Each structure stands twice: as C-alpha cells, then as structure tokens.
Length: 336
Image (cartoon, rainbow, N blue to C red):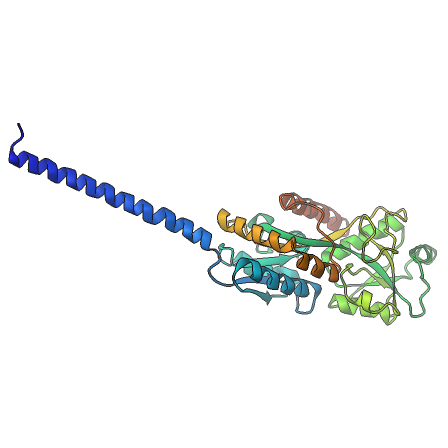
C-alpha cells in the first residue's frame, strides 16, 4: 500500500503532467485561432496598386476606377501609385521588391512579358508574379488621318504602299510589342514603311491628325481615336473579331491578312504571397469585375472582356515571351 509520501510524489508528478498538458492545449488554442483570425482579417490596412505608366493614360483611368470599386468590396482603402519609367520596369521592380503580403498590387500589360527579353537585367522573371485578376483586353487599330488623306480604306493604303515602296511612314512609341506587331503586319500585307517614334501614344496619334505621318497603331482604348472623328479614320483592327465599339471597322483577318494581336490589362502580386491572402484578393477582385458597375466602366473605357482564364495566364505569358523573342530576333532587336 502506498505511503503518504509516495502518494504526495505521485500526486505532484500527475499535477505537473496535467499542468503541462493544459499549457500545451492553451498554446494550441491561442496559436491556431490566432493564425486563422490573422488570415480572416486580411486586409487590416490600405492596399496599393502600382501603375508603371504615367498619369492620364488609359491604364491610370482604369486602375483608379478599379481602386474605387475594390475599396467597397474589400473593406480597406485602395490607393493608386503611378511609377512610370524604364518601359514599365521601374514600377514592376517596385512591386517585386515589396513585401509578399498582398498589400502591393501591380497593374500591367503585355510589357510584363516582353521586358524579360528586351532587358538583360529586368530585375524580375515571370515566375516572380501571380495573376490575381485579368481586367480585359484590347486590340490595335490602324488609324489614318483625314487631312489630305489618300487612304479612305485599308485596301487603298495597302495598294499605295505596294505601288510606292518606302513612301509610307507611321508613328509609334518605341514600345517593343507594338514594333513587333508592326513587323508582322508588314509581312502580312507586303507593305513596308518607316517608323517614327514619339514619347507617348497621344503624341503618336496627334502626328496622324496633323498629317506628319500616314498612320499609327494605337490600342482600341486610345481616347483620341474616338474624340476626333473629323480628323481620323479607323481602317482596321488586329483583333480576331470585330469590336463592339467599332462594329463597322473590319478586322485584318477579314481582309485576308492573318493578324490576331491583342494586349491585356492584368493585376499581379508576388508569387510567394500567402495562399489564403491570394485567395481572398482573387475572390474580392472577381466580385468587383462581375459587378454591373465595373463592367459598365470598362465598356466606357472601350476595354473588351478578357478571353481566357486566370489559371491560363502563366502559360499565356510564357507563350507571349517566346513569340516576342522569336520576332524580335528576326528584327535584330537585342536585349539592352
């Protein structure tokens, strides 16, 4: 039979064991719900959308409308920060170097992929980013001026170009993607022209209106092409099908030239963002983009719905980079 001393020793040891178990249980109870609460709470402070383009561009207008609508859904302020420069590299690098916590979002176009080839040291790879939303897409439109214009239709422009080699000129912005699309268009139509680059898309279109150049290839969302119907003719679009915004303008494919080129508008975060934060951000943005308000705003900006899935974005970016690299090398465009 145990002595009183033995009973006290067993009781003490059992008490210590129970105490340790209680402490462990308390720690688990404190830690796991705490982690869940942290995940559920995201976001607890304002978010920021970094736009690597100048204020006033279509990207700026789109991001600010999106920020307003996302603020309503996610429960925190969403700020827009313009970080232009380096062909969008400066803003892209800023997001790459920000914490992977879901509070810094990158607004990008096809330049996200093309810069990986164009620059020897872009400061990022495609694997560094995960898409959280694709806002839409836009084809390129060929616009000619009405001032002393010889080209009321794309057929007449092509015929003139073939009859007068080297006589045509076009305005651009030194953007790698637009340069490559222009090269594909040259091959498809059998027409050559000189490219004159301007500092921005607005200036490139204004050069067409003033008669300084024969034509340009802005995107379908460029405001100037709609605001100046008395000074511009929109002759053809590079999208696979006609645009709702320009139902009377034929596609190059309709005209017998196999051109299907579009840029896109997307939002990205660092790929090592926590999965639960990534999921919350994606679901919130999906709610915004599915709202009637956001759909109407994108329509007003003349941005077409994105044709594809979020899951398919990595493969699309990889393919775009491969296609661009191949075409750029044909043109002798080397990484800088």
